[in-house]
Amino acid sequence: MSRIPDQSGEHAEGERTGDAHQLPDYAERVLEVAELIPPGRVMTYGDVAEWLDEGGPRQVGRVMALYGGAVPWWRVVRADGALLPGHELRALGHYRQEGTPLREAARSAEGHLPRIDMARARWGGDGGDGGDCGAGAD
Image 1 (tube, rainbow, N blue to C red):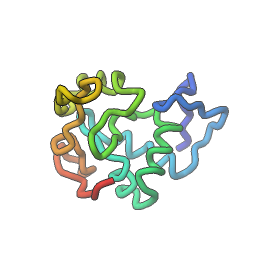
Image 2: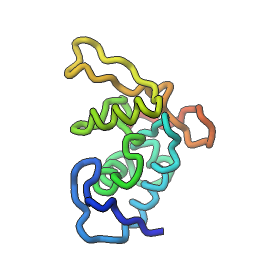
Image 3: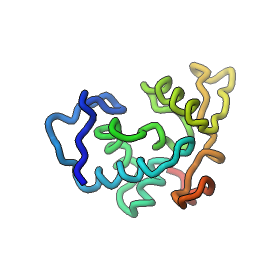
Image 4: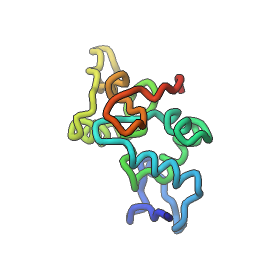
């Protein structure tokens, strides 16, 4: 299946994809995993790489930066649960709408933005609603 980026060409990191209509195979597979993550749940960049048994967190992050605007990009996150820099408010709106478990920020935290509660929100890809992926730190 070839995927065409959203019409604006804008993606989660604000990069443009140009006129390419066919994605690299690895990118296609990363985006397919992102689409499997249920609403209210997340996987880390490292979890996605482990699921695919290829690449690592940086490669998955690069794919999401370039092509992630066509999928629920807010469900692929950093292992520490921090919101995607530059897209915090958009992501937070999605998390609240989907009921993603969040941890309120400490008063001393910059911007007082919550983080994703990774212990409760992390999806293991098991088809169920619970379970940790078992991935190591990424």
